[in-house]
Image 1 (tube, rainbow, N blue to C red):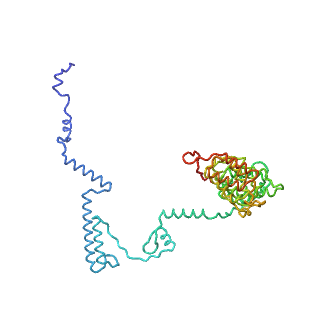
Image 2: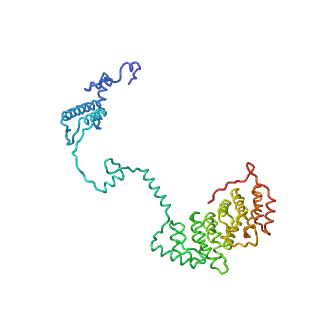
Image 3: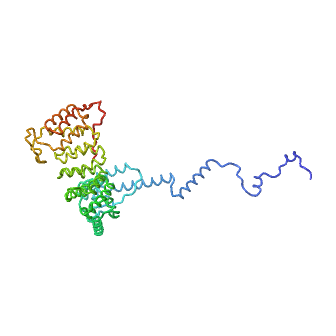
Length: 462
């Protein structure tokens, strides 16, 4: 078989063209391209078919429907105008005036051309239940007569806030405890009445976490607790409660046991475990001062009780701000020897007191300059041994004055120093007076104005 030359292969095609093969088999092959208009028509038909399948109408169909609806609406309005002369509207038993119809026509022109058909109903009388009327008045506003004012969310929130504030201002009332709780804590009270050492009951340990712990604590009868139980309970409550809550425990339990322990003892001494409980209560200084010290001074307190309680302050470190506020409160009380004991102890702790407290101390000692005997006879027994200058003050007052002069002689002004020297002359003590005068004269005046480096503003620590 010979090879085909290149010229022969290029001149004769190897097969017929594809369109000739298709036409020879009886098929129709498009020779001219489709027109753009035909393609647009087919595309629009296809979109119309898809829209009909999805339930949507094209623009032309929508216009026809809107036109028909507009014509029907105009026919209805024409019929209503014809019957309007008789004063009765179509399908309604209520009289309608011509002015009302004109208003309705004006309002209908403001809206779109397509509007739904109006439905008319006959008037029916409906009886409303009282509960439904109250509920309607509570949440909705009615101009006709069911309700007069609407209640919104802001009003409800403000009302709830006012209710909470009123509840806080009301005194706490007793809570009715379940019988099982009362029985359980009565048994715990019996255990604490004989407690000496060991772990406390678990039910007693959860007391500080209860909201009404005071009511439950009353069931245990704290007056019958042993001193060991008082000490353990003080540690528990002071460490787990806030200062304002711990103050309640200290005032209701610890203060009463402190007084009863001194009164019941033969030598008028304090039980060792109650003394330890007082030291533990200083873990919350604000609770100690407001729950123990100030109520003790305001009530009946003799010098012995004050001396025992003040010894706790000498052995425990107390923040300066708490001590400053407590000292200011004591200086504002009426003069009592027991109060002066606490003043002296707080002065001897050698705090860097703010100038506000120092000024209060100066005024406290200055007011005894010209004090008369009538001012002291209600609070102490006075022995006036022929002294024409005034009554004799107790030795504890002179010791407090000496402690102030020794510690703060350089923190007073020259004017204050002169007034204090005059007080020493008026209330002279033969053993302590010369020492007070010597300390005051040896002091240097306090720096004032911009030269002062000491903070003079006291923050209320309570």
